[in-house]
Length: 137
Image (cartoon, rainbow, N blue to C red; front, side, top):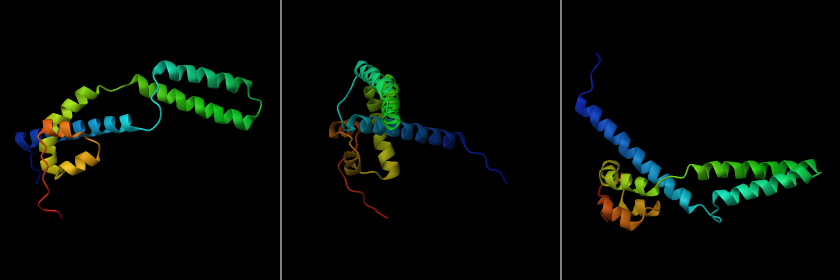
């Protein structure tokens, strides 16, 4: 026997997927911002790529050359990442709209969000309160 999902059930599933995506995207953007190291803009990365390429061209030692090639590839990947910069404000707004209901449904506490790096002001805007989870289990 095949049961059909109601339109309400389908809408609830779609809403859950949308909320989950908003939460994941925002948390991923926060993690990207927290990565250690000096922040470089696209022009700085391009200049570094050129410097490394000059070293590659001049390096007689094949082992050192392959290390330099890898460094250049890493810089090129970083440049691609920079070109796809995210709109943190838009992601934050999506998180704010989804977080309270998502937290309730998933049993995620204020403390867990804070430990994940979500600023207190964002949680306040989202309506996520500082409460403890009643049923842990």
